[in-house]
Length: 169
Length: 169
Image (tube, rainbow over all chains, first blue to last red; front, side, top):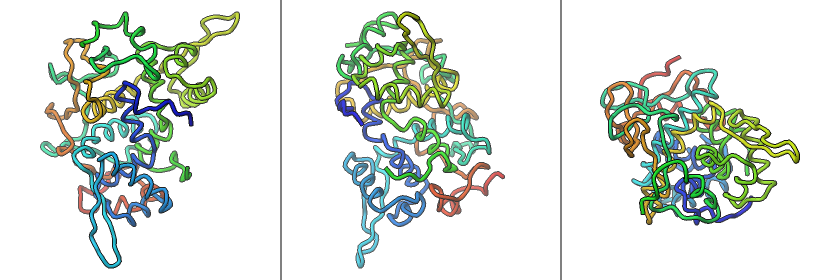
């Protein structure tokens, strides 16, 4: 794979997928969300090698997304859980799931999200300003204060030229 | 990378990241959303090789996420645009962006999403049933009708045992 340094790209999408760019990482986060946190359970659930799982867990821990605790000392056994930073990935899990449900799940959704308070399914993006549900065509994109021109965003400022207000800062 | 066949895992997250598991694919979708669609513009913006870009575009086209049109015939030049299936990725772009904005953007958000109708920023997950905003802790997960036990979901049914109603079908 090429390495333009994704972490150095002034783009929150690039920074996020740099940390969570691997399919197994997403499935580990899914399993921790559901409550599968022991190393051996994760390995069995995902069907991957110890080495792959160890690598992905180390990367997630290094980025502050999960934390490890020992639940048995002889022999030592560990389990993993999401940090606040990790739990905050939930809206991404929901949106990844919804796209897969809509476009790639002929047998119906494998997993369903419901709102704890009212018990109903059907989470969707809404505008926090006016409360209305929002779909792709309702969203405008604008440059923000953290934007910079560089590898990964070399032409974006130019593309934004006709598509919104000037950068915020 | 190991290959448990992600496309065969009964999980909408696995199916989605199998198609869009690569960082460059997400940045290509981002650029097409902003309006950068010409091959040469994508290459310049992302700073990647023609080969990498060609591979990722072919994969996205094969999965029905983008379509290609010739905008000049001599010499032939192509531009790419999102299909309906591709435009439906927007909520994922928004959620990837928001996590990166919150946890990895010390200079502020590089890009801002606003609601076209009211002009305000601040898109968030809400419950379609009751209209209330929803955060990670407000969401319950349940098995759905498309769930199956297999590689990638070997223990999930068991983990769901104490965490919701029986599968829907």
